[in-house]
Amino acid sequence: HKCKFTIKNICVIFSITVLFLVATVRTFTFDVDAGLQLGKWENTTAISLHLSPQQRKNLLANFKAAIQIPTVSFTETNVNTSALREFDGLLRKVFPKIFSSSLVQHEMVGNYSHLLTVPGSEPDLEPYMLLAHIDVVPADEADGWDAPPFSAQEINGFIYGRGTIDNKQSVMGILQALEYLLERGYTPRRSFYIGLGHDEEVNGLHGAANIVKLLKSRGVKLQYVLDEGLAVLDGVISGLDGPAALIGISEKGQATVKLSVSSAPGHSSMPPRESSIGILASAVKRLEENPMPRLFGYGPERGTFEHLAHKVKCYKKIPFICRVLERKPDTNAFVRTTTAVTMFNSGVKINVIPSYAEAFVNFRIHSAQTLQEVLELVESTVSDERVKVELVNGFDPLPISSYDENTFGYQIIKKTVQSMFPQLTVAPGICVGNTDSRHYKDITQDIYRFAPSWFKPGDPQRFHGVNERISIQNYEEIVLFYFQLIQNNDVRKLPPPHSSQHEL
Image 1: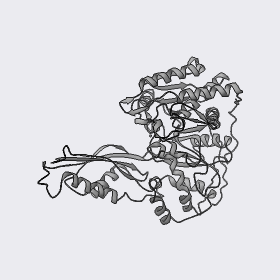
Image 2: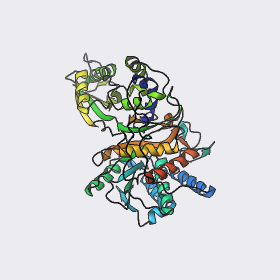
Image 3: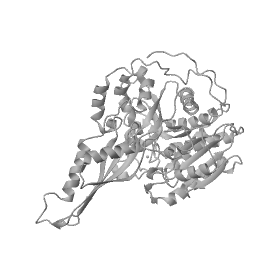
Image 4: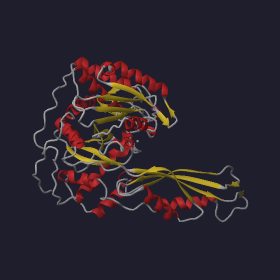
């Protein structure tokens, strides 16, 4: 899954597009503050969080200790198991209430992932689930870090280290919030689960997938799931008046396709008119020169534009928008299914014409397209019987979660965000990459992807990149967010929405 501009993290770049996109919204009748216009909320946040200087010091020390453990996932079969065991020990040490509480049931899943069950006092209320992941991608100080990537060094109010924004801020934030609640005698009304995967960076097949299998075997159905994904964007969206919180409501699909050519081998002194390499190279070139069709405006991004249009200073027409977005790789990703040739293999000796050549192409599938449609377009674009086209793996785009004023999960998240940050505009968004949450689609209808990590210009590039960091203040805000969110979920039902609407 993440942005460094790869997989799930690429989610954040979506924000950059909004300058151009919101323009499409001109005369929608739409209540941009639907969540705030709901009637009187049932009061559930009974416990406030006041931390002493020593408690804040301990909170930060716990987070730094988590960053200092190199829980790196290299491949699906190569993860740092000794670091994962060390991380398990850290959690048990710094969150004693959670691991000693008779209320909380803790289970290890897939050897290194964690499942926590917190039963509520009213079992008829449908439970929800909070997700985060323990593992991180590799990091090398030689790439130009200002501090060693597993040092958790503090520089000018920021903690530097791999995992500070992907995704140990959520792991530690969720658990720290629960620890504080338990210390204050909290018992939830609504049951909830916490799932901490150990291999999200390499597809979550042993962590999240096994947690879901266990929950399904118990007949668990969830009101909603909240995972990582989008964030608070401050100054990242050009032309937007003020910061915005984007809550991910879907993810692009994915396909890895193998192209291969077989031919008779030969000596380089007597070459054929076309070699296996040449034939395959031509096929790859056709895929790059003929991108997938424009689908801008046909996916969930439309909801984003509706929510943000009233805050954007300029308006432009769709044909212009598409041309602008297509110019840059990071924004082109929101216009269409993207095509990326990632591997090309052939040849064994400089004077031997190879009998075999293969290439692998990765597609990130737009929400308005299916995996099957992508495969059919690949076949028609390659259009060469000598080139074999095979699907290695893939899946359709994730379902689009609800985000209207009657949707429990979205409105609870939105209420929590806006109670903490009243200056924010909240809007639904789309994740370009993938998260552990995709494994949960069979046990819930609504999956949301958000944490209140605060990003300013240049910060999205830190995902999977150099100088990943988080401010001390922002980490404290994340703890408070989950502290309030858990309590806000105890409302039995949403208040009725107001009927008033206004024209944009």
